[in-house]
Image 1 (spheres, rainbow, N blue to C red):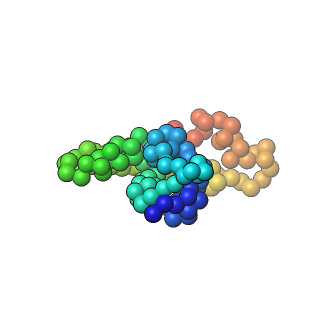
Image 2 (image 1 turned 90 degrees about the horizontal axis):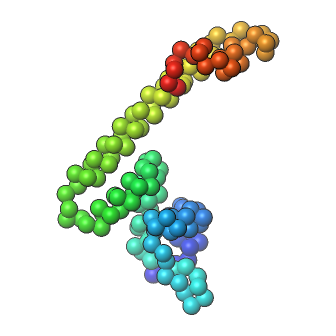
Image 3 (image 1 turned 180 degrees about the horizontal axis):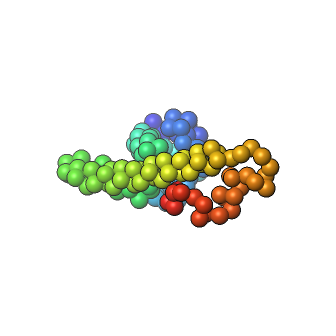
Length: 139
C-alpha cells in the first residue's frame, strides 16, 4: 500500500502541515518519493502517525513521544521506562489541574465580587490591574 500525504492525513486525522512538521523534527521518518517526487507512505507510517496523534491528544510532549516510539520498536524490553514517562506526565497533568482549579476559583471570586456598576468601580478590572488583590497567587 502506498498512499499520498493527503490520504495519510485523511486516514489519521492529522493535518498535512503537521505531518511535514513531524518529518522535519524526525518524529516521522522521511517518506519514500515517487518518480514525480510525491511523498509516499505505507501502513507503518499510518500506524506511527496514529500513535503520535493519540499521544499528542493525551498531552505527551514530543520528546516523550519520541522515547515511547523507540520503546515500541523493542517489544521484548521491559515497560518500566514507558510507565515512568506516563507517571511523569500524569504528575504534570495533576499540577495543571491544580492550577486550573485555582484559576477558576479566582475568576469566580472576581465575578462574585462585581457590583455590576461602572467600569471605574469594577472588581474584575481592579483585580486584573493588581495581582496582589488575588487570593490565589499561583493561578
